[in-house]
Image 1: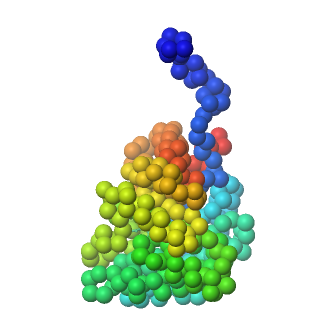
Image 2 (image 1 turned 135 degrees about the vertical axis):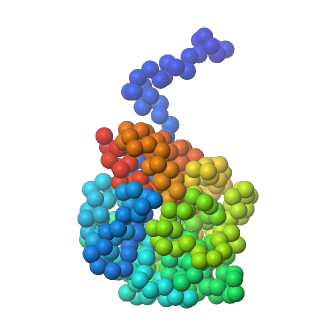
Image 3 (image 1 turned 60 degrees about the vertical axis):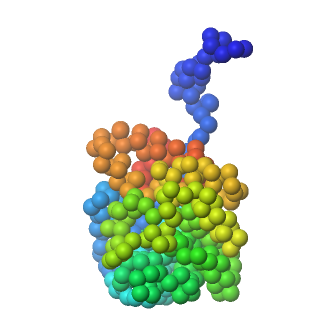
Amino acid sequence: MHGFPEMRLRRLRSSTAMRELVQETRLSVKDLVYPMFVVEGRGLKQEIASMPGIFRHSVDRLHAEIDEVMAAGIPAVLLFGIPKHKDASASGAYARDGVVQQAIAAIKAQAPELLVITDVCLCEYTSHGHCGILKGDTVDNDKTLPLLARTALSHAEAGADIVAPSDMMDGRVAAIRKALDEGGSENTPILSYAAKYASAFYGPFREAAESAPQKGDRRSYQMDPPNWREARREVEADIAEGADMVMVKPSLAYLDIICRIRQATDLPLAAYNVSGEYAMVKAASPDIVEQKRLTLEILTAIKRAGADIILTYHAKEAARWLSE
Ligand code: PBG
């Protein structure tokens, strides 16, 4: 055969059934993780203006949301905490009765089989909004490590199934692995935000988590968007330090990174479909049919690029659309 007219690629696109038969990438609700914001206080359910449909809940208001996540068949949530009190040493991050620690216990009591992943970072807990301890104007890498390790262990002790460091300090995976192992949480896996870029797509998240840096930006610790070889080095370093799974973040402007990291490692690979990506879809069209098509196309593309796991604010609606 020499191609057209013997070969006609359109033959396999003739009907829905035919297209489904030859579909190469299948998105499933089982691929999805739903990020949630838990705010300290009582009786709170606050919609995030830049992320329609996404709320901050206080621990006592989480119940209904967890019921929805379970009913949708979503296998995991990712927790972010917003404390009342912030200070220079981020003490709320590793407090035994901190907002995330309480949320983990509440969720595990309600839905033991739902996987609880926690974001391990200090930015929501520091008065200055940076992801670590400041020395002058810069984030002190080595002084930050013990606090991250303590935070991760406190999450594991509260019942977290997976801890996910997102701070981008060097050596944090090793520090966390050591603390977990010494603290008796040797069976808790680490999902490292290995290739996390200093991205403008985190804008809405910083409103949601009240974690925008008061001055400066995160470019001295998060990755520079033009670089891909450096992403491979980050991933290699995190694997050497004991990461069980790695993540690329954001997703849409970084599909090439997802694809290349997929080829560079056999570890499970996660991709974070971040707040700005969610907000763009919501801003693109008020039409729900259009939103469904945009969302499923985006999530499928992230999976096609090589992600096994997709962290996305679309998880609940995508679960519904996938089952229609
Ligand atoms: C905390 C953290 C951020 C996100 C996840 N963990 C914000 C940041 O690094 O500024 C972004 C998530 C999103 O935009 O959806 N370090």
